[in-house]
Length: 332
Ligand SMILES: Cc1cc2nc3c(=O)[nH]c(=O)nc-3n(C[C@H](O)[C@H](O)[C@H](O)COP(=O)(O)O)c2cc1C
Image (cartoon, rainbow, N blue to C red; front, side, top):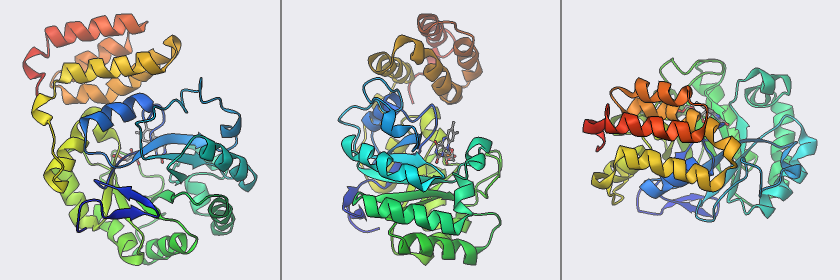
């Protein structure tokens, strides 16, 4: 990587090369704004969106499509195993002013498996080729794929797979450094991602298990990747990308100003502004499950929020936590 702004994903300039991962229930407009405002993010993703349902989703009421204009660049992630859903889904993404389209090829969830989508689609080369060709023919937007390492550690297979994506017109490959089916408790294999990076001339992002600047440095070093995709680490510590941007990519930051109570309160405000009342509590619970990890006694915050019956109760309980238990560790 040489100069600032040099990473190009098709016609999209991305800097710093740090992306917020697609995560169901987490990577909505509220989290995207929170993390983007803290800094260090060059690329945002939606959570996976079922291509079949997308055309009929109403962006003014669907929590999956709610978005503010400042969330840019934003790549929308599609999940599908059916070629016939691609065309209408891509049309919709054009209308939604997407900055790119991603195809989910890593999700191992049984529901995706049954539909031949996610990691199942990644294993069906013929069907995948047809779907990628359909996607490529329907849009000039940057096209990315998010994959896992494969079924076993084999640098030849991974290299061949990534070359195939490049030949089919994919502009960015993100590799989650775990095998298909491996659980998140298993340490990701950042070194294995290097085979993907070496095989192609399009950018490769590494993903999995980055929770600190030290992790980010090691992941980039071992994978040789052009950039990073950060998931849970950016929920636990929404300022993590700002730290990575600052310490690795020289992005100015205001990290000394970060107050952990403010971050939580800003997030609840973002939820209030974006989501119908009945949708907020679930999203706050999902966020707090990880955010609580940034506090020494965070389990007390997590359990208070998980057992709340309303958003106002959750906010009150969080306030108690901040004024009593966590008072001494609100600043970074
Ligand atoms: C709650 C949750 C939801 C996820 N949803 C998606 C998704 O919609 N699409 C996807 O490609 N990956 C999804 N993932 C996987 C993440 O994008 C990422 O690959 C994984 O969490 C490893 O990165 P991390 O260690 O930085 O979190 C999800 C992960 C979590 C924890």
